[in-house]
Length: 67
Image 1 (cartoon, one colour):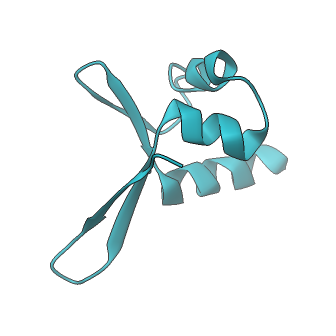
Image 2 (cartoon, one colour):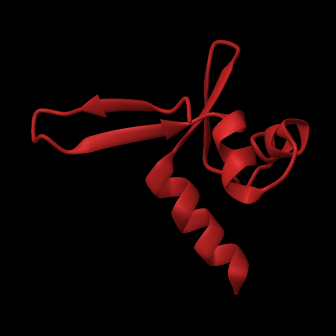
């Protein structure tokens, strides 16, 4: 996966996922995963043209969608 890892001062890792990473994890196409990033209830970040989501936020979002 092409995810990015940033270490904070507390040595906690912050990991970001891209639409490609989300597609691999969910077993869907990249365009379908990219559509999630534009949903109001999806915790995505936009950095210029790049779409990212914190891995922890993505996992939490998936957990709430199972219910």
